[in-house]
Image (cartoon, rainbow, N blue to C red):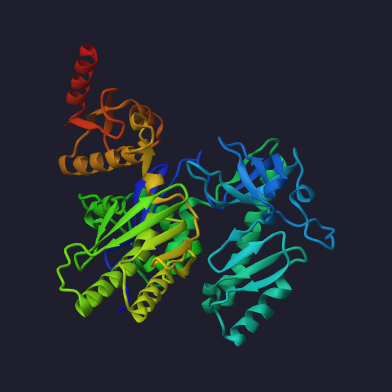
Length: 495
């Protein structure tokens, strides 16, 4: 059965959220970060701060709160290649200016990782401005199509540039490929012009445009609907799709109902479930997710199994493990879990059943666009695997460490709480046709909303309430502006 895929886009102003659903199940969620955050694909002018020969790495100042990490293999080789592999000291030196690109976002404990091997992503092609030649996706084995693209692109490439041909290119017509190549070249020229005008370190390119990059990655020919909640965003999405994914235009829909889009599609509920420690399985079993600094550990439990043992138990355990394998692949993608992952499946006696579970896990992981590798099962029955980390986890994006418990608990980030307040005000104002809202806010949220440039559907009167929890707010009144202003004035006089 073919999955029905939908994309839902909510929010406006500087903060948007995009959800990808398959058969109404949330499989991926992305949010637009503030400009202060470092995202994969962004390009910076950096300066080498430290060179560490012991770990063949360097730290590069890029104008952010934290220096970026640069490994020797991510530095372009010197133009004059020696007979041996060069060291980090031979490739960079302290104080040197470099043009770098983020290849892995940072986290609370790790610095963002960068490379000097720049690439500009397109839907069909990846332009490599510092490399030569053509590389093609391994997923396309048809030699005739590979030869056709080789003959088309080789004469067009300059002597000092290269391209990677993505899988989607094998079904695209020549005009679209040529148009995208020219588009990527123009973007590279714009970046070079920005670099030439920049005197210090800092960002030069915002990873194309966040919306453009997200639509390019999520929208394909099998996406049935693209829902957009905000009118201005709808126009922007339409313009972007015309450039990067015109096949998505037929399903583009402006959502104008009173109920918020994410609530209507069940996205908010699924997001809340996706940050829970426990995940239920259809058979009654469940998964437990635990995160440490070194790895993520997933424990599979049978739950209320009441079998009598023997073959009956083996069958029930195997069925639970198969359900777990499918659900783990979904949760890893949705939760954006990367790095080392250890799975403790329920113990099975028969080798054939162990192989069935491993095969099922690999099959489900293959549906994820982010690469993952299953290394096998240990003597203790633990499955070891890795998944490439391309962006912060869902928990890292939605929550901030709780200062009251020294990071042992989590609070929703001010950006996420502001987004939820905006959604609630938008929903209520549609129903009640309200002009203004009076709301109590904790300190961090009070200042967050003050700085945010959101087109609120009603005028917001804010009351500062330091006693509230950092991820808490209270809507005291929603209605006429005259009454909201009167109540606001009265409250401020009392306090």
